[in-house]
Length: 215
Image (cartoon, rainbow, N blue to C red; front, side):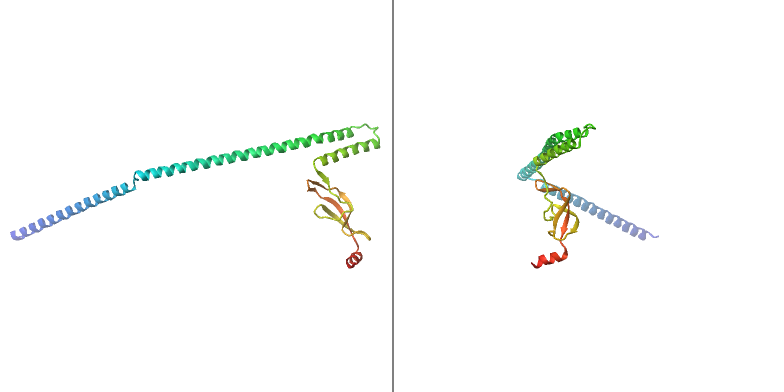
C-alpha cells in the first residue's frame, strides 16, 4: 500500500470515530433529557395527587363519618342479637312455666289412677267403676280449665274439618251424611283441632236421596 492510500484510510477512520462519538453523545443527552422529563412528570403527578389543605379536611371528615356509621351499624347489630336472645329466653321461660302449671294439675289425676291400681283384690266392680268415674271427672275439669273441648259428633252432620270418617253405612230412613257412631272422640284447643273425631257416617239409599232431591 502506498502512502497516499494509508493517509486516506487513516482520515476515514478518524472521521468514523468522530461520527460515532457524536452519535453516542447525542444519545446520552437524549437519555438524560428523557429521564429528567419522566422524573418531572412523576413529581408533578405526585404533587397533583397530594390533597390540598381543604381537600384533606374534607377527606378526614368523610372518613370520620364513615367510621361513625360503621360503629353505629355494629352497635345496632349487637343490640338486635341481644334482643333476639332475650326474647327467645323469655319465650322458653314462659313455656316452661306453662308446662309446670299443666304438670301440677295432672298430679291429682295420676294419684287417683295410682290409688285405683293399688286397690285390694276384694275391691268390688262398683268401687272400681266409681274410681274410674272420679278420674274421668277430674280429666274433664282439667280439659275445661285449659279450654280443651270435645268435638260434637254423634247425630251431627258430617264435617270433614273436625270429623274423620272411616266408614259409610247405607241405612234406610237415615238422614244422609249424618254421624251415627263415634269410634274415637275428638278434641279442640281454643278452637284449633287437636284430634278429629273418628266416626261412622250414614248414607241414605239412592232412591231416597233422589226423592229428597226432587222434593
